[in-house]
Length: 230
Image (cartoon, rainbow, N blue to C red; front, side, top):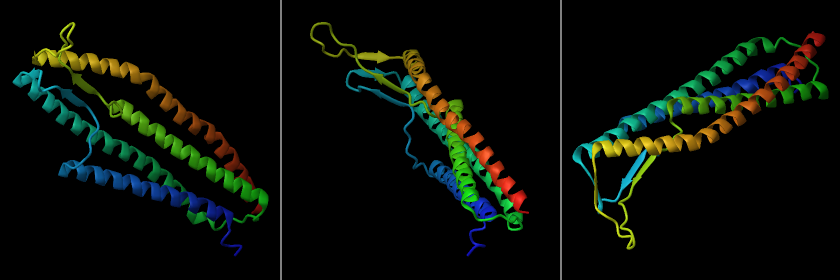
């Protein structure tokens, strides 16, 4: 019973198990997203373009441009999602290998199973997991920002209204009209989302930075206990 609660082994195997499970989920996400893209069955909530077919018409080249732009951004979103999962997989699997290498020698360490040592084991484990998952969230947000995958653009084209009656007037948009409208609306949306994106990133990284010294200090105390007991 005491050997089962051997703190050094329990510590590294517990963290390694959590990191391995996380790695499996990220690896599965890459395969799943790749299959969705190949089969064309992914749900896409990226750029959407709406216009009233009754009163708004597009020239053939403008309509073709919108269709091609949606397909291009669909592919970009698929690549960005797989890139995000790949970065998080590298992070989680790298930490898993770090703790797995320590697992081999952890059984040779002698440590008294005391309340004090259990406290350092528990807090160190929790602090590392908080650090790891907050860092993962921050890296995921960074990838989304770098690829623009977190921006859900839309273009809503409405027919102009007749002054007084408010009746819609027929309008035909050329390719340049569509490009100008997209550029203007996307610029406005990027400006509006810039602040929220920065706040989200800061929130995630702040938690990670606060948890890191807590983990280091408690892990150091746990190591000191190992040396004293040896």
